[in-house]
Structures are given as structure tokens and as C-alpha cells.
Length: 337
Image (cartoon, rainbow, N blue to C red; front, top):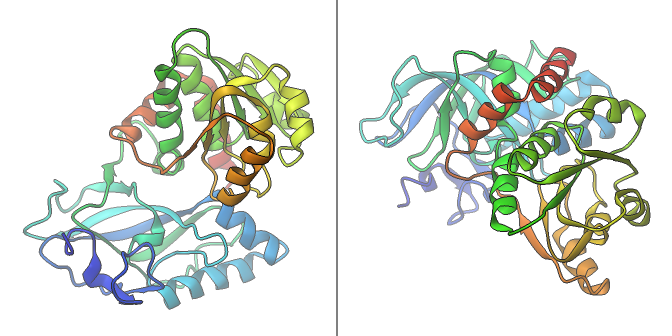
């Protein structure tokens, strides 16, 4: 067990799993159950990139320098403020004799586990990145463990597009599961419906038979989700009353995909008694969510989206293939990078 979850890579503190560790051993030599990836591109999660960009006032050089420092210091991309990381794509370089992942040298893959637990060594100083986008072209090595999750990149999607989809593939899969657990009429509101995880969640909810409401911050975002949602509500997701009023009749399920803090109470207010709130943002404060629901006397089930369900990557890629509006939104985001 200890080998398969990467305990040998933990440098400090001793005894914790790689995600909880402050520092990992990112050396490229692999153990029998490990796989080494030649890294081609990183994708920072939205909350982490936003925090770094805001901290440095949009100065790309300073953002790049801090990301490089985090990776060098910690042996992984683990933002110490947001606690989040992202994911990567690359080519399989070496496979240990006991690896259970079914990979072979030359496979082009995306990691489906967080960079916060992935040993990562960068060899080019992030020189190809301007620090102004979530996606980072780079060179280096990453290590996968026996219990890592990885997907071979689909042939019909550009690698940058596939990376953007894989980065958020847990959200639509969980949304689909929760919708299908309800009997009868279901309405789903998605806070941050114009984002990557939000747009996929809207598409998943609609295909599962739900009526959908996209909660977006302005008219520009509203324009990007027309055709994806049955209704559009414009509100600042950090304003609980505004969110509840914009949504109107409380919904069965609310999915939070906004990458800024302070969206917990609006999601709770917008959800009917007996409903479910799914938090799929690394900016979520779970004490605020729990205490807020208590203070509002809200009888709602709250779920932490953990980013993994069996088949989640294939499910998300299938949504992009089936729903042209989702593919268009993702392609415009990738082109903007």
C-alpha cells in the first residue's frame, strides 16, 4: 500500500500522504510501481491561477517566478495559499515493471490526479510561459504512483483542448450522478456556468433530464451560455440574496463552479429543502458552508466534489463531442490562452 500511494516520495513531514506533504522527492529515477512522464504542458487550476495573478497585479513575470519557486521548493505544484494545483499532459518515458496503470513508453497522456500530489521537476525554468494563462508549456518530468489516475489523450481533440477538459472532468460526472439519483422533476443551477467546469456541468445536467439555470456574472458571460442552459440568471455569486433572487424558485441541485471565495451562502439559499449543493471550487470554505447552512436552517445535503469518479474523463470528452456549444466555449478559452 505505501508504495502504491507514493509514501516513499514524501520528504516532509514524514508519515503523511503526498498530497498533504509540504515537500516531495521529484527525482526522475522510478521505483518498480512508478511511471515517469516527460512533461509538455501544465494546467493550473482556476483558483490557484486567479490567486497568483491577483497577488502580482497581473504581472506575468512575477507569476511565472512564483510558480517556478513553488515547484522547486515543494517538488510539486501545490499553491500554499489556495491548497490547489492543477494537472499536466506529457509523454510516458519509463514504466516500472510492477506498474498497474497499463501504460507504455510513448503514450501521450494527461494526469487525472492533482499536481498537489504529483512529484514534478521542471528543467526549463518555465521559459516558454508568459505567466498570463492557466496553461503552461514547459519541460521536465513527473512521477505517477500505482494508484494514480491517468488518461491517454484522445486522437480527435487537440492536446490543449483535452487538457482543459480533463482538468475539470470530475464536475460533470458527479453532476450527472446526483441528478439521476432524484426521482421526478429536477432543476439544476450552476454558479459559474460560463466557466469550464460550469459549462460541462450544465450540459451533463441537461442530458440527464434536468432543467438548467446558468448563474453568470454579466451579459458577456450570459452570451457564452445561451443554448447551453434553459434559463440564465445574472448575479454576483458572492452576494447571497442576489443569487437567490436571480435564480427565483429554489432549485433541486446547485453546483458551485466559481473560482472565488464567498459563494457558499448564495448556493445554499438558492437550493430547496431536501436539495443538494455540490461544491466544485477550490475557493470554497467548508466551515462557511456548514455553518452557513446551519444558520439559515437549510435542510440541504452538501457534497465536496473530489474530482474523481470512474469513467469521468471519458464522460467529459463525450460531452465535448456531443454538445457543440460546450466545444465552442472550450476552444475559445484555449485560443484565448
